Image (cartoon, rainbow, N blue to C red; front, side, top):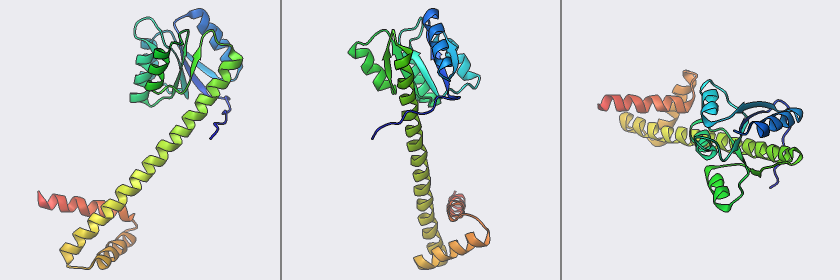
Length: 201
């Protein structure tokens, strides 16, 4: 499966780089390419911006920063904020690349990086991030459907026991009640389960 590059127009990047000359070059080139660029010179600066509600489409992180390194920030982005990121580093040793990959980096570019090469790498990372978000959304929808199905089965069992009904009769009773109340079947099932748990306390 190939990942199609996405349009950069309006995409916001958080670029974390402690070399001001490199940072200025990146900002100029990425802005010219159509990105909205937010910068931070340290992990602390980036965390302060994120704490204020900032949410980039992609973070571009230098691996080696003064203070906490980029891989520390990468784990925070993944675990706490679910923000996609790629690494930009002067180091390409296998151990550093492996750590970045294990942290969930969607790309790894080595400095000095030609902007003509970096922009497609960022586009590919953004496309991959979109794919992963779609997968997360579908997984959540599937989990919600499975949870709803489980609740319906439990509620049918409770209704069978309480009313001495066959399974089909108990299901039809709940279905008709949900229709009458204009509620989703899964919502009514969850209420039946909760009521049963409350009574058993």
